[in-house]
Length: 414
Image (cartoon, rainbow, N blue to C red; front, top):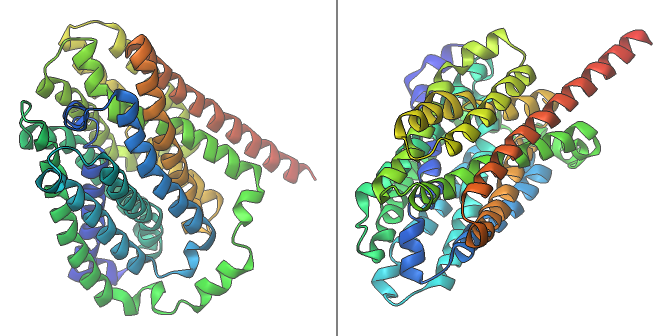
């Protein structure tokens, strides 16, 4: 317990949170920046969605690899490497207009692929690092770390609107350049601090991890529960990533809001999520995590549907986005990570990879699907489709909870 209170461990925990912040700002910059990116590269909504698809290909490959072999590696070093990759991809994206003033779309796809590998490694391994470095405090530190992801997600739309010029398409690159530089700073500090605490972490001797990893790297995927969790995560992250990328454009095109005000809609949504992240430990102490997910998820889906239906009156929209849609689902990512890690406590990297793999599958497909539908039918129907994804995720977790309950009852009866 003492080591958790040492300044170096506190600093390392803060840097874990900082890694989530830069990761969130990078990922959530594509939505508020969509109009300028499309204008600069002269592309349609579906081709903008394809940027996210390519980025997610790197993420999917990384998530699959780490789900099978992640326990073999020193997670602190993997996260350091991945921070460096995300920084490189973001900085390179940021300098495209300086070297290719007439385009560079294909280079953009390469750079986001690199960044996708980076942020996925951060996401997969960070849950394991926190769980294994702070075992007595993981139920507090893990939600707080994810709260900083919400902080980054909340800041991203405002960050983008403040650093771009809406009449100069080439300024789309400025947020990426800045977040890349910030990521490089976090990378350096994380690596130095991680090396200092290494001797007193489980990663000082990797022999036990490697032996365990070599036993059966794909064992978790032999269970029905793993596939149910994967499918539930896929639907939930389809909901979240679809909103992150396209909700600002929805408010621009369907509700007639300006560039900054439409970005603010995403900010207030993630502000509600941030509030829940900080209070979620109180819920998790008093409620089974699966039950929490079911209740909060279905209420969030209802509120988000209402937010898309009330028209251009901003007062009810803001209330629904902040205090209902955003707040209610704000801890659902943490809940899914906890559900997965509780199911597979000996495989924290593989369990975390389930959620991250689903995140990248959703990121690869949903922005592209939403962009395709929006080109043909506008954005209102796709937004309703996203809320159905949230409801479907809830249904699957409920089914999994009932399935687990029956298994426990059967074992007791026998």
